Length: 507
Image 1 (cartoon, rainbow, N blue to C red):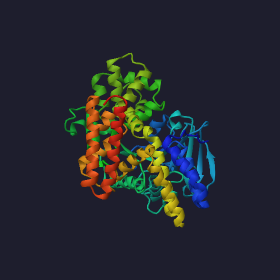
Image 2 (image 1 turned 45 degrees about the horizontal axis):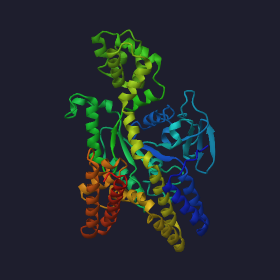
Image 3 (image 1 turned 120 degrees about the vertical axis):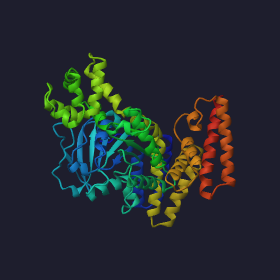
Image 4 (image 1 turned 180 degrees about the vertical axis):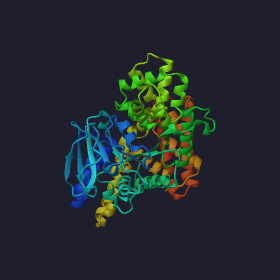
């Protein structure tokens, strides 16, 4: 049921390396190489992780565009679920012994919250969906961290590669993530930072690894704007201010923090918002101002206060939109009493912040898929070599990787390696140099990589060459051996940018 994913040039190079090594290694290592080859042909695997009740499954549904992941407490919320593309919608329970069993969707189209199977027998769930977004992105829904259920926590740690008791090969086998979307709420805790550091270290403790973590600040509709300095009563200004503050706390463990209202995103994107909901909102908008004000004071008052709109209808709106979404809808109706259900849904989607999350997923993960997958493939090769009891086999794998990394076309893997070593704290640099490595190793356009948006071509080329010279000097004179390794990579990155500008006649 899996879909074949077109390999990029870096993934192809790693695949060729695997195929060349296969006749030279033992049967166990060869089986590991086959697994690497399968993963190189598969879509990028992104885990959605975070603490319990942070809204992970709600965000998963919004990203997929279908309310299929259970959000209420049940057996399935204690399990890892991989959402993959398939030509027919179906769910499989995969057991620890390798067997599987198909289970039906609930009547509402969601995975059943209770499976009727002993959870301890289950490895994970595989959900195959026809949703186009899954053609090039496998989304992994994980149990909540911080749960009292130790089994749920262990399953998530195994996906993230932070379970020290799991061997490195098993860690990346069936449900291992290649990138993570980490969901936080208003308060970042110490264990959030520890988990992200462990994930980065797990991807950085190898010859190559990507910067592959993005955080989402969920439930920003619960932020009180007046409590955030400079927000001036604007909830989204408050949300972005909080997100920027959290980014400072979490960096360099994550590339960015983006605010979102996950519940509103799920409702607007999955077809949960109906024409009946729009009609009920129009009816609420027609109430007198004092009644409307009273209803929006609190969730309890919204459902319990006496008015012409039935309480059960209001409860349904509250469940799908919360007070923030209802308030935004009423403002839109006030501004345009003739607004249609379709336009109202689009406005709610815009108000959720989901498009900003998708944009960062695209710019951080999708455009780097080839490099991330190639790096993950090399990581698995390194783990296979380290677990081999044959010194000769270990050397052959190591030497083959080194030959690959010396090729000019593999420089992007060196950049990803440098990014990971810096973000994981494996190699320490001053804050200004760390920021520069992250910027020049990013995937924006050249002015953005150089931190010189809006500057002219000649100035860009001169700056790239100046920084290339500086990093080469730093590598030779001012750096530790580990820092020097990073500096040589950054020097070459700047030099290649300079060459690109010159070749295009812009320098």
